[in-house]
Length: 321
Image 1 (tube, one colour):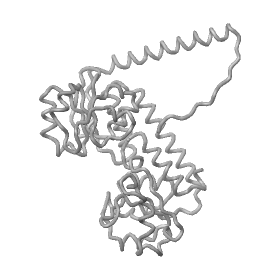
Image 2 (cartoon, rainbow, N blue to C red):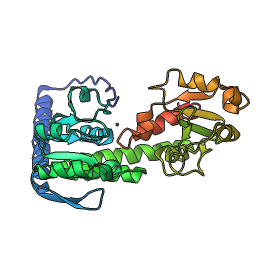
Image 3 (tube, helix red, strand yellow):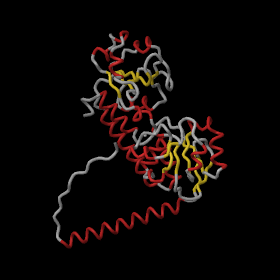
Image 4 (cartoon, rainbow, N blue to C red):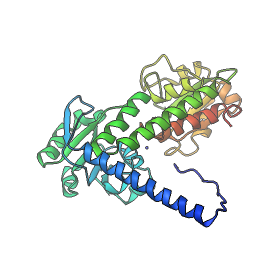
């Protein structure tokens, strides 16, 4: 749901003929790439895809104006190079920076009239909220707008499918494949490096603070990420996002505590450190309490790999330098 790397400067000294030849080669490559892109777009439409609810959705032509109802869809669309086509996003969207320039269409309850006024030809909805928004989504369909419900991703494979699905619907399948392959490669590299972890640590992840403490159990990205970096999720026997009592959390006796709500609770890690009942927990004794970016570890999009890396560097700084 921050992306670009720095390029090293390349000093080149070539003969005039070599420079011309290189330019000619680049132009030929550019022409070929443009041709491939046009052919891909031309071949893609009309296209019928199976959405996140298992229904067939037909996109008649290449979408020109897109509205996204959830941040993860927005991040995927931007990664696919569709930023300029996005005309509306949810109130919860925060990445990339350009979303601040887009029209806001509401939060959990989206504004149907606002969306229709933007005249999109594609709305990216989401299976996690589709059942609660049936009436609104139907109104959009009745207005002649194509609605694509993206699957509710809970695993990395699910995220790959989400990226692939949006890529198919927008004629950007090649870019989608590139993103997916990059994510898979990076994840394998992280797992390989994690083999150097000599002593796996016990980790408590807190996604909501006291008095109602919530954590991440199995079936969540956070649990998958901890497994990928050879860390033990102390709440791994729980399902989904359970609420845990403070006494139970303390009994887990974690070596490291991770909070994910620092964006709305100031000094989140310090507040955990100051809890009287936690004073004998190893993570507190050794001051191993850290806050990480919630979006990177919970938002099902291309940046999940950044989330894995952030957790790895936080928990095992000596291995993931």
